[in-house]
Image 1 (cartoon, rainbow, N blue to C red):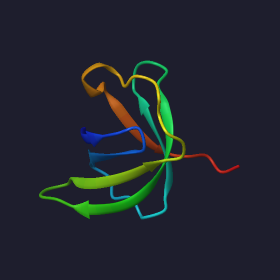
Image 2 (cartoon, rainbow, N blue to C red; image 1 turned 135 degrees about the vertical axis):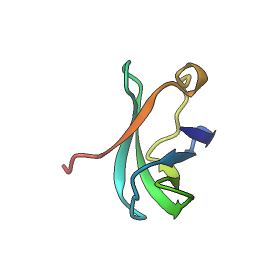
Image 3 (cartoon, rainbow, N blue to C red; image 1 turned 180 degrees about the vertical axis):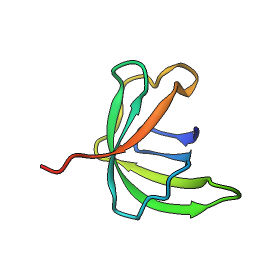
Image 4 (spheres, one colour; image 1 turned 45 degrees about the horizontal axis):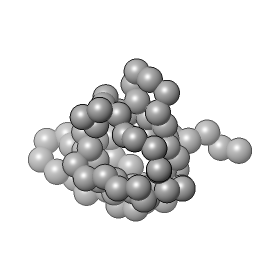
Length: 79
């Protein structure tokens, strides 16, 4: 779930704990929207949730999926 988003980054709620500097892809579960990002911080919340701060690899100029869409986060493949 996206809590806050801008063209440069986002704060999302995730069930997985991510390490700072992890490289990942934030993408729609259905659709073709995706953006490369780096984890800036990950704070544990109540239960099995974490607040994750993301910095996008490049500014996002396009439109975000309607209503935040159904988004997922996956580790970015190494080059």
